[in-house]
Every structure is written in structure tokens, then in C-alpha cells.
Image 1 (cartoon, rainbow, N blue to C red):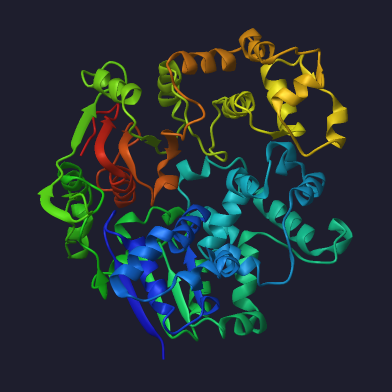
Image 2 (image 1 turned 45 degrees about the vertical axis):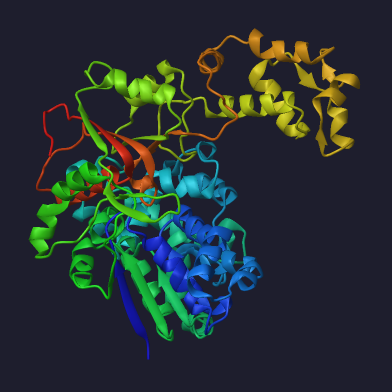
Length: 548
């Protein structure tokens, strides 16, 4: 008999913390191998795995309960890597077949030119995230629809996102499926599996699923509101023999409807959860009220209202004092011309607070240009879909350059990359590859392994000064502004879809793409973005004057 528990709570109410406590409590009766935690993204899975394993979380729990879990957790590192994962990772590790590789994609390109040049994609993850056909294919299957039905369900605006017409798709689908299963084409004895294949095969192969699922006694699903049709099917298969099934989520944060999430059903299912978290630990009062204003039409539509308290100040022992943190909201017309713009600039340059510049849809060129002009280094996800070529590699190499100057040992490959990005005339002698794994700068200079010769560290420092390029000028500007590129990043730029579950002191939100206030999907998107802020929210008003 399975006991199902639904856990709901608005942003910043401690859903992850609650799930970690549930995990620890489960260890009273079960071993780590019996407990599986599923999350929606790799980032979220890594976060909850890190919380489970952190000494701070363990010590706090043991202090509160007296239940000793330290040794159990510390001896279960490999189990946690295997059992606290995304649904795709869970299924991939348990089904038979060979996962899709970039080399496979090169073969596929030869079969059908419409698949484009494989050199565009550095990893399978990027391929499936960015290639129009694979995005389309993934969303169709996540929604439980065939390609033709899914194409017909799209709006004209959505269809424009894909490079191919409905007339091309059947042939591409046929080529792709033939490639995956025909040994004569791909030269492989095993079936090649993509992300959706892994989940579907797990669900459909009862021999595999029965064997795996009989050992699962506790199943915890985080961010359940984002599960697609096929993911919900897999969760049902996984939960059929468990003793306890925990589903945690927030329907107001369901922003993956395009990928098969069903916020409507989730709103209904979670209208009266068994555990409802109400204490806010992130958003101050003014941001809390602003977020409620955004989401309240959805609450009214479904006939309920969530209790969501704003953040309170904490005393020196971390206890709530009852004094509400006020917070700030600045509604701006632009990043540069608004009266509040100098205040934003001042806080970026003169505080240690972190900032997320976030957006939806089109490329945030204005945001990037603004931060580049300020001379601030930006942390941008490697898979961000940006036409703007931000010099992330150059900055990464400069950090390594500084580390090398400070005495760190680096591999010859990294040193070559640094030199290529700093001054191509300087190279490192290939013979060092056969000597050691990593190298100290002083040793390399002493042994004369640089070509042309570098006599001392001062000469090496001058390499960066000699380079003149857009990237080098940007880096110089960063350094002249006393920005330390070695320190931890604090200025981030990400799409709203990728920041869910994260928290920042400051959120700078571009509302220029906001349109219809009756569109629940857009309301949920804005709600997620604004609720990331723990101190200050900066909104850039839409060009058509629309604002909530």
C-alpha cells in the first residue's frame, strides 16, 4: 500500500529543505539504495544532492532530531549519484541501448542535409537543446503527441521558431528513426537512444522496469509541476511498488507547458496538499506583495488562495525575530536613461551583492552591452542560445592566466589555450607533454619551455598587455575597474526558464516582451522571475507600456 504525500509551497518556502528532511527521516527504515529522488533538471538534481550531503544540513537535522545519519550519508556518495538524478538520467542508467553521441549525429548529417553541420554542437545536450528538429521532436514526445498532431497544435508564431515546414518533417522523422535502428546505416549493433527514448523504453519494457522498481521503497519527485506527459508516465511506473511517494511542487511555478507540463491538472491536484509550506525565507514584503499581485488572478480562477508570508529578519542564532524585511522594487523605463539607473549602477559596482539579469524570448543584447560597458564580468550558461558572442572563453583563460601567475600548476593543454587567447606568438614547447601532468610557471621559464623565450614573470605578464582585441579591451576594462576575475561570479545572465529554484540578492527583469495580462503562462513566467529576489527587484517596463 503506497502512501502518497503532496507538498506545496510558494517560492522560497523551503520545499527543498523539506525534501531533504524527508530523505533523512526515511533513513530510519530504509537504506539509501531504497530511496530515489527525481528532479526536473540537472541543476536542480545537483542542488538537492548537495543539500543531502552537506555537513550543515546533516548537523542541523541531527541537532533537531537526535537521529544519527552522518555516517550513512557519507558512505552513500555513489548511491546518491545514481539515485538523486533527473528522470532521463535514471532511465538511461537502467535501459539497454547506446546513448546518442555527436559522432552519430555526423553520420545522420550525411543521410539528410537538413540536419545541418555537426560542428555547431559541442555536446549531445546542446544538440538536443538547440537544434530545431530535435527541440521539436522532444517537445512533441514530451507532450505525448506524434509529430503531425504536435505541429498542428502550434501557433503560427511558434511554428516560425523551427526552420522546417510540415512537409519536410515526415522525411526527417523517417530518416532519423531509420538511422537509430538500421544497423546497415549506423554501423552499430545496439539501438541508439535519445533522451525521450530512454524514458519511453524504461516505461514500455516491463522486464526492466519491474526489476528496477521492486527495489524502490521511497520515491521523492521534486518540481513535480514541470513533469511532462512521458515523465509522469515514468513516475507512475516507478511508484507502483513504493511504500512512500512524495510529490513536491508549486503549480504557480509551472513554466514548461510547451514541453508537456500540465499546470491545469497540477493546480487541481495540489489545491489541498497534505503539507503546505507558508513561511517565506526569501522574498521581503514589497516583493512578496508584488508577486501575489501577479499570481492572484490564477488563484481566483482555481478558487483558492495560498498563504505566503514574507521574509523576517533573523537574530544572531538564525531564529526569526518577527520583524518583516521590507525590500525594494524599482520600476525602470531603461537601464541607462531612467532616474533609478545611477542607483542600479552604484550597487553593481560598489556592493558585493549578486545580480541576475533575466529575460524571456529574444536575445538580451541591451543587457549584455550594458554590463560590458560597465566593465563587469558576466556568468552566462554555456548552452545559452545567444547570437551575441560574449567572450566567455577569453575570460576563462584570463582567470587561468592569473592563476598561473599566482603559482598554480596547470596542464600543458590549459597553458596552450591561455597563450592562444593572449598572444598567439607565444607557444609552449611540445616536449613538456611527456614530462609531467602539470607545470609551475617559474619552472617553465627556468627550463626555457616557452617559444619565443620568456626570461621572467614580468615578460609573461606583458603578454596580456600586448594583445589588442575587443575581448582584451573588455578584460582590461574589468581589471581597471578593480573587478577580480578570480573571485566567485556575482553577475549572471540567464533566461527565466533556467533560474527557477535559484535565489539572488537582485533581480533585473526585462519586461519588454510581456503582452497579454490574461495569459496565465506569462503570469507564471513573471512570477518565477520576480520571486528569485531576496533584496531588490528592478523591472524594465515593456516598450508598449504594459505592466502589472
